[in-house]
Amino acid sequence: MGRAPCCDKTKVKRGPWSPEEDSKLRDYIEKYGNGGNWISLPLKAGLRRCGKSCRLRWLNYLRPNIKHGDFSEEEDRIIFSLFAAIGSRWSIIAAHLPGRTDNDIKNYWNTKLRKKLLSSSSPLLLPLMHHQP
Image (tube, rainbow, N blue to C red):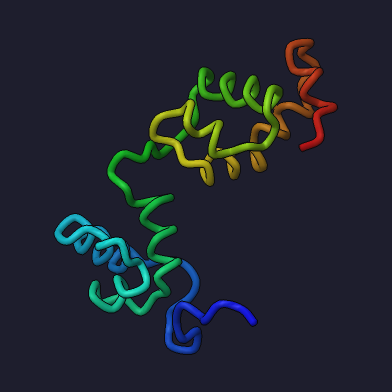
């Protein structure tokens, strides 16, 4: 026996978020907060989304303190060194990079940094090449 579903999956929108949806979610949270209840938030904010989807959208993309855009060379060095020390513990790595989310760092690692590591012959990076998280 599992947990009850959080929403009726047949009545919620799925897929990419529109700018209008982002605006509705941002405006609602800035005005009222999330009230500690993400499940009821979509209805109150006028969104046809699941509460979990709203929570993840806010935490990973819309919060005002999130840093968007390219990672710096210094951020790359921090990620490489922490990955070598602790592996793929993205939330711990994110704690060392203010404004970056664990999701953003994980995606950046999987799409860019791992390839940079594998194509590099730098002696500094060689120990990382054999690290299997």
